[in-house]
Image (cartoon, rainbow, N blue to C red; front, side, top):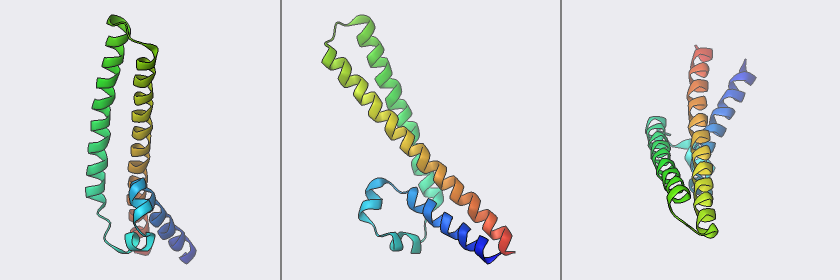
Length: 118
């Protein structure tokens, strides 16, 4: 029973750490992050906002690419630049969704841990 609780707590800490942005993981110390209040509601709201804004930016970029391909004679370099920008936005979106998933899993494990401790 104690091993299970320790493993769940360890996994929660890992997920909290993974739900931070790469910049925060580089700058902040792991112990200071795990010791202070985490604020998962604010973090979830922030990540959801970033995902939605990323969706809008991807839509605008796809509309620009469609317009350029269909109606404007553009150079191959410009089209490659637009596709590279799209790839960067898609990669950022994947990373944001993964961080949100880690946050949701940590919240779920925290509820399971509370049930086990009762």
